Figure 1 (cartoon, each protein chain N blue to C red):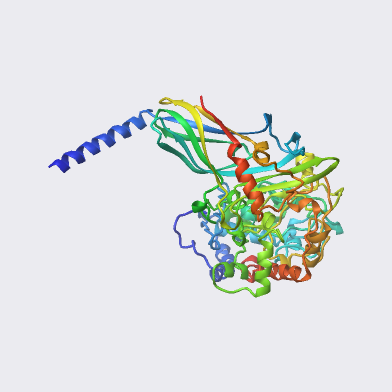
Figure 2: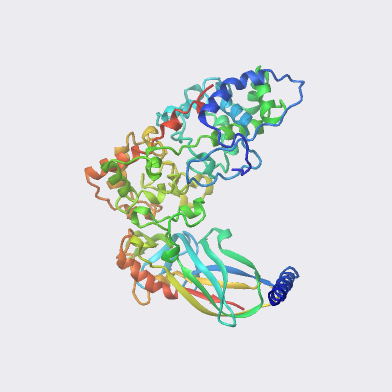
Length: 353
Length: 243
């Protein structure tokens, strides 16, 4: 995050609403022949005590870039048959995830893995369950071109966007020229996704001394952050993820080899990236294949369902049952529910215009 | 009048010292962190190692924090190098640390703390970055940061299992290990010698107490017995080599 002072440094949701409402009108007055103005830098205001957002010097956040990225994110014309947008599988009401275990793409095809929630992605440098993309700019390339997701090609997308009335103007506003390119499409999508920051849950407010947890929630917090529950090693820190890869004991011989597909290192068989637990109550089903429908099922798995395999993470104590009582499981779920952030899921600037 | 003269002298000397620094009258040293098990180079997930308890093990993770790194000068005084340093096996960028602008001397020792002393080990005291935040010791367990995470799998007498050796300030108790190691390092102006710091991980698991993974497979963060054993075993885990 830049340190320069600007009138947008502390941009608030209400201002966003005003901006997004009027932005198309402003852009609409921008004729092709007029000299382009530089886009306006956008400095996100981060939640208290969050780590500094890693810089993206090749693709700095701008108000116009985010506006364009938001439009593209909800635009079904990015898919081959114009039936699927990014938001089809990353739905705001579900923490930008998908209630289907496996997401449905063009032509009724289904994907191989559960749609990951799009939350606090600016801090992640190995995206997807297997970490195959090193940046958000790189990430969007995969679903757009995957034959069972959006199934499209960039020449086709660029042709469609050029034929629209709005996009050349939006690209000019975001990049100072109306040229529509693959790079710019990916950059704009990345910019919008970097703004999807969640950090105002009840848990955050409790950490800041603004509210109290119930005794059950606090019991769950203690279990979560001690060795009894031992959730914190993979889901600690304010981001609620270590952004590392683990084999969490789902299968002895995994049908999906996970991180191994990328590294070809046998030690990575069955390893998947820890997702954030922020808004976890909204992002069911769970795991890379969506096999668990409820948090109760997830906790039961970690309590007594871990399957041993050569790459089972040592954090799981060789699959030994935790012996959590029903009261303790309920407390853990109560705590997990405090990670929901209505300001994030209901934020109008994250939704379609 | 005398005060003015002294001030002038001080300013002159400051100028001289500053000039010396900018004229290359100092040197640098590079600390290199090396890891082995009884002389066998440590790697991740590939080679097998054997400890005193007969556990044949592979390592999947080794990361730790050392703090208060300093050289001991010929006059016996400390020359601070770094407040803390994070090391992760396999992460090349963490395996060396170069410190510049050190006055030439014939250093006679090296000091550091394995882990972080209690007075410095509070949550939020290290930079707010994922790599440090992942080392946090939960506030619910006293707060601060892990000293070390050493994990892997092992086999013994036909059975196999995993181990997770996590050291840190259990319930606020200080298990950090102050180390003072003799070393000869001759630093001349403009030079950049390497100081090799070698961790023999098997030393964590013996001397004075044998540490058997079968007795402590994991969940030792809240186990004061295990933490005490590791603190005592850890006193000779590191060796240092100057030039």
